[in-house]
Image (cartoon, rainbow, N blue to C red; front, side):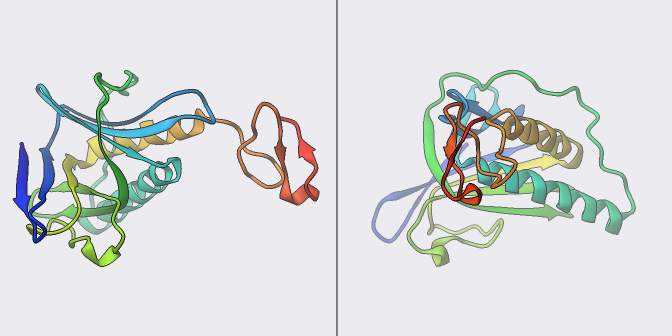
Length: 193
C-alpha cells in the first residue's frame, strides 16, 4: 500500500508500508568497488527498492542484531533465524524509489515485530518524524515490520552482502582496489591487494 500524504509545500509525501512482507532483503547491483546497495521489500506484486550506502547496510545489520539480543534478554526468549537463507538476487525491475538518508529501528512490543524505517535524504534532520509516528510531513518513507526470526535472517544476509565486496587493507582498513590504493598508514605509498 502506498499512501500519499499532503505536505505544506503541496508535494505528496510517499509512504511505503510493508507488514510482514513476502521478502525484505538487501542486495547489490554492480561489481565490487562500484556496487550500489538496495533494500527491497516485496509483498505480492508490490516491489519497492531504496538505495543506501554500504556503511548503512553494515550498521543496520549490527544494530538490528543488538536490538534482537536486547529484546531476547528482556523478554526471556531466544530469537533465532529458523528459515532457510534467502540467497536469491534482488527482484526485477529495480526502480530506485529514493536514496536513504536516515534509518530508524525499533521493537514494537504490542506486535512483537522489528520496525525498520528508512527516510529519504533531507537537508534537515528535524524533518524526520519519530519511529512509527503517523504524520503528513517529512521525507518519503519506507516502513517495514518483520518478525524477530525473519530479522535475524535479514542480518545474516546483509552481513554476507557487505563482506562480499573488496577486502580491506590490513594497515588502514580502507577497501583495497585491485589496482592498489594510496594507503595513509604507509605514508601515501600505493599498496597492492
